Image (tube, rainbow, N blue to C red):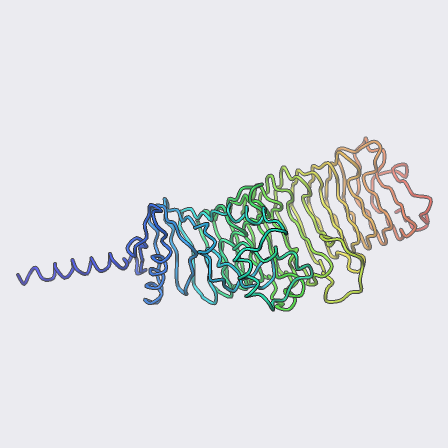
Length: 524
């Protein structure tokens, strides 16, 4: 009898572990089914998941485990030192009952600080948290999409909108408050705020109500080998990954196909963003594949808190509307600077392969103030793109885009490169095979270096390069293909200091407008 006691004790200890959690390699696991979660979606598992998280947090941290099965749940709120492991074969299905996402919590919506519906995964002021595994996380966003898309200005306001109004009486609004969607703001699928040491890895996210993965004001964020799938035409504003006003972010080996931008980098909108003044900085994006979406990697338009020190490399965009896109407008303020883009393949790009547009919203010129945005020191290299339009750079009169370089790039496009209101621009070894119009058009550009720009498919009636009202140009190392009839056209009374050096073409390939002072065109 005495000999059997240790066995009995071990048996009871085993039962306790099974009821509360189990340990593997020193890591404590908390199986949500042991806390009452049904893995057949027959009941909401919200409270069971909360109990598992609370038990892990009470023990100092651990892994909340979802074995294979389907779980129906409301929002999941993290505490520090918690990992959610969604195992292969496990699916988390979030409720589409809007009431489940009350009470409203501190949030951020398109760069504006608000109190709104709880995000589906939410954390605030925690550390050492993770979502991992090979399972599926479904936001069931259609009811959210339909409500917003079908809402009419003359229909009665809902109880959720009245609650939003009550909690947001004194918020700092953007320049156009109507952008707040009349007080009904869909929640992101994942929004971690003011937190650090975050890992999201391996899982598949789909059908997000709004932006999918949206860290805000976080530090040390790793997003690796994640799949994001949202219907292209049915799911408005369902961006893939949006780290906003974060620092030290690494995004790698992800697959994204969504109803808006695939990856966006933001830092707040207008005065609310400038007031927080928290930049997005030290980001690396690499080895990602992006299919449908408005843009592959997009910076802005909410960049009022600055965007700095960003690298984008080794990515494939296939079927997005645009490839690399920077966008802003008067009123945003902020600076986008120190951006590096390298080793990118783009195919089936519906609009532009590369965009830097400071007139995302049209407005009249104004004096330079804190409202004036800036794009500067942006370097792009080793890019091949099959696209409708090669590149579009558009500054504003009072603040030109500056310090832009393009190295070793090939565009197969209908339309070529357009550069307006810019200065200190360099193009090195760039081939643009455009089927309509010139390969390069520069308008109101100051200090432009064109080094080895060419087309292998020259058009008989269009010059390869058009310079209009450009000041300070060095065009060198040009060797047009033999069937080129027009290579360079210079127009505009303000064109001056145009220097042609070390080129292999005759004067017959140069057209100079009558309004141009010919002394300003210097050949060597």
